[in-house]
Amino acid sequence: MAEEGHSGGKLPSDIAALSFEEALAELQDLVKRLERGDNKLDDAIKSYERGALLKRHCEAKLREAQLKVDKIVLGPDGAVATEPANLD
Image 1 (cartoon, one colour):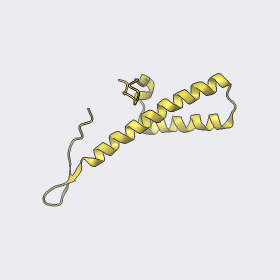
Image 2 (cartoon, rainbow, N blue to C red):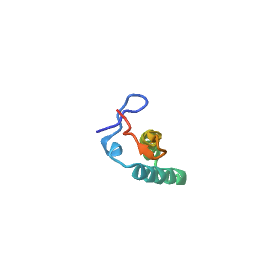
Image 3 (cartoon, helix red, strand yellow):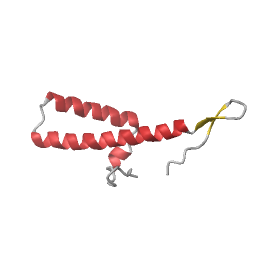
Image 4 (cartoon, one colour):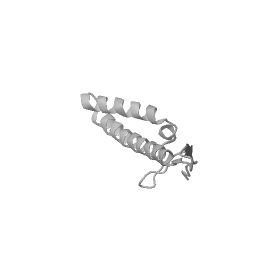
């Protein structure tokens, strides 16, 4: 199941299946390889494109986490409770 992006395009299923931590680690690895500059131009462009998709995926995961955190509420007795986030 792929995620919708800002432009309405879907993420490739391999990226959509990644956890935040996995996507971030791959993005960091891509950035390191691009900074070294040892890629051919076509490979660098493909890496940049994949990095942009990974970044979009990480941002979506962070938004989901923020929505969940925002749903944590204080009950009438001052106890912390949670409400299920409606992420649809």
